[in-house]
Structure formats: C-alpha cells, structure tokens
Image 1 (cartoon, rainbow, N blue to C red):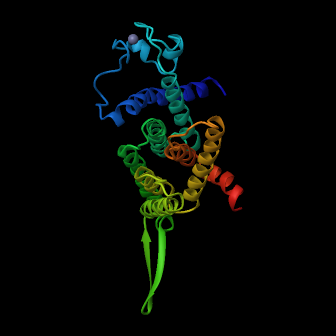
Image 2 (image 1 turned 120 degrees about the horizontal axis):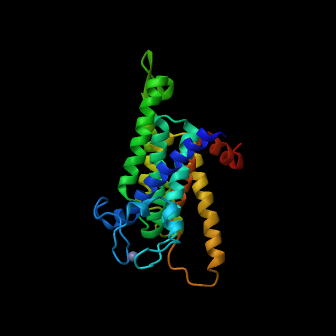
Length: 282
Ligand SMILES: [Zn+2]
C-alpha cells in the first residue's frame, strides 16, 4: 500500500474511533437515563474536564498510561478498547461496501451493536434506541435494493384467486422483522417450557426483529442466529469451567452474543454465512 492508501485508512479508522469515544459516553449514560451531551467528558473520579489533547481516541489513553492527569485515578481499559473497536468496524464497513452510503449505514448498525454488547453485559438490558438504529438502516438499505432491482428485491407470494394467480410482494425488511421477532418469541416460549425459567428477554426479541429487517427472512438471518447460539454455547462452557464448583448466581446474557454475531453478519453476510452454514447444512 502506498502513502495515500495508508492515509485513507487512517482517516477512516480515526473517524470511527472518534465516534467510538462518543459511544463510550452512550454506553455509560444511556442505561442510566443521563443526557448524552451534557456534561462534557470529565474524569469520573475528580471531575476535571478533559482537554482537547486528552480526547484523541486510543492515543491519549496510551500516552497517559491509563490514568487521569489530575488525580492519577485509573481509567478503565474499556475506553480505548471501544474506541479501537469502533475504528476497526468503520474500516471493515468501508472495506466490504466501498466508500459509499451503505458503508455508513452498516457502520451505524455495528456502532449500535457495540453499544448493545457492553450495555447488555453491564445491565442485562438492550436500550430501545439500538433497535431503531438497526431497523432504520435495514429499511433504508431495503428501499435502495427495491429501487435498484424492483420486484426481484422483494419477497413474493402467489395464490390462485378464481381464474387468476395473484402475487403479493412484501418488502424484505418488513418480512424479515416479522420472521425474526416471531422466531425468537417461539424459541423463548419453547426454552421457557423446557428449562422452566425465562430464557430470552423482550430486548432479544426486538433485536431479532431489527436484525431481521437488516438481513431479511432468509439464510442470512439463520446464520446470524446459529452463530450467536454457537458463541453463547462456547462462552457458557468457558464460564462453567472457570467458575467450576462455585455458586453461579446469574445466567449468561445472550444479548452480547447476538451483538457479536450481528456485527460480523452486518459486515460480511455472504462470507460469514458460507462459513457458518458449512458447519450445519451444506
Ligand atoms: Zn481525575
């Protein structure tokens, strides 16, 4: 890669990382019902306001060795991790979609899922705003698909009515949302009947509806679910081994696994589906 290529990807990375620094604020404040804009970024320990030079994503944390310059209070490593993850997701969105509008929408989905990952980990809830961001991106990409491809970009269903065959065509995002929500609701009831305790929260069902709007009602959605289930199973196994013999009071939230699976499926649905489905069906 020549200099201009490096420069291009650095700009994308630091744009994503700067947004990631805002996502840190969202992750902390959204589930607590605090304003996202006020007060401006400050040290959680001594309250000193951060200078512009301390707001450079990832770099500031490393230069300050993870401590506040004023009171030397430790700053969680999660802050630069979220910033770096957001930067990498922006690069991946541009890599798989080119520097066009779909990349922006796919990045927005990934950013919402990054927030989901940490908020669900901390509070076991998924904020509703996340579902709206993902659902809106899914609808906009669907409008673009119908604009470019017309009827073949929709889900068609034909019936005989008298002498004629009538075909009803629904937008893929609408059918995807309905199938996603329905499937997760049914799975939730089934799991509750088998394990005799709530297995899937309403937040998971809403996330499934939003991801269905994005991925459609086909195999991309099935891959999204299978990958989340595999990730959840593996994590559960690791937690089981690490906490062996100790009392385990809380069950593993499924939301973070749905978020991880959702990110890779949003970025590269074709490639990831091929990998996932090869393990199960093909
Ligand atoms: Zn401080």
